Image 1 (cartoon, rainbow, N blue to C red):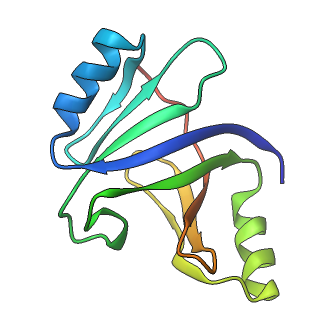
Image 2: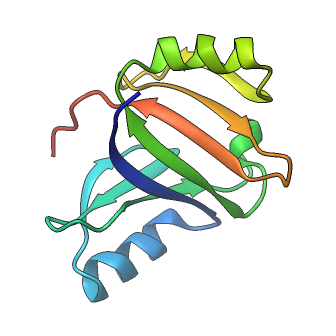
Image 3: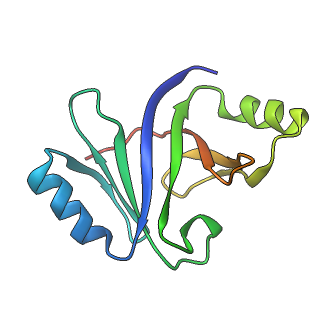
Length: 123
């Protein structure tokens, strides 16, 4: 696995309001906007920010909080390796409608880690 980028995913009630704050005050720009989330980036080395809507049926969106996301290469192979090692996979490998391939695992203290192989985002 090679980590190529990092993102902090924050689950909030109003992604648009948070996006306005980050774009107005902190120099981020929106790179992907869907009904479920807004992805923000900067041109420097800052981690990307993903603002996810709270209350969706998906386990990762049910309550306010965050998850630690790493963009990686070879996400399918990492899913198999971690499954074989006995890691607690809380969302199996899947492909999102916009092209990302991802899965989630949870550490013993409840920290949700998402490994994702991003499809190219077109702004």
